[in-house]
View (cartoon, rainbow, N blue to C red):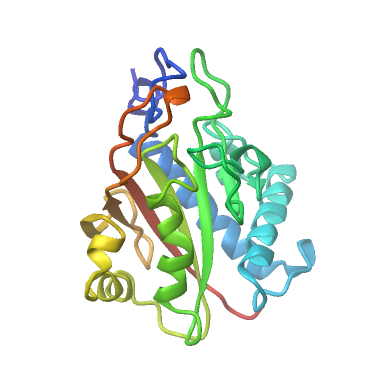
Length: 247
């Protein structure tokens, strides 16, 4: 049985949280598809008609539209993605709009990728939740972490999972992953604030520049009785940074 299949099948108890993680192979396929979509979105602005010098929500929407276009064109990398996930991500998805307490956060995650239907696995609950932030001279790590990363730590997003993804849209500065992120997390009190148990570490399958890194964080809350109680354990957050360039 392949790595992807062996780690993606099996009995799934809805009360047993967090849900089963995605394999490294599945995550590597998603990374390649996102990088490819990004390049095509820069190259073909007419497909989405969005300004990449606007808000991160606008850029994330352009990614969704571009991926849909590539799927229509039977792009090989997107077809490979479609073997694992629905190739069209959900944009600001309503189904992830409640936190672990059943309350509605101020915002919804930018993108969600849900797996293809598989036996005994809830594709509605088991998913990759993506939050995106612009990184620039005026919007650096304070916003990326304080308004983005923290949402995974405190259970606003991806509370049913032990994995999540941050997208950084880097504008008008040199990309310095992982040094920028590590420098911010190393500031006084930040490791405790974000529950950091692993500093930025390279994601082994990632080879493109800048390479994907991951951080690991403790989550201080507990599941409600409705979800079986207990602690959620740590969450691994993958960081993919993409360079904004003029078309």
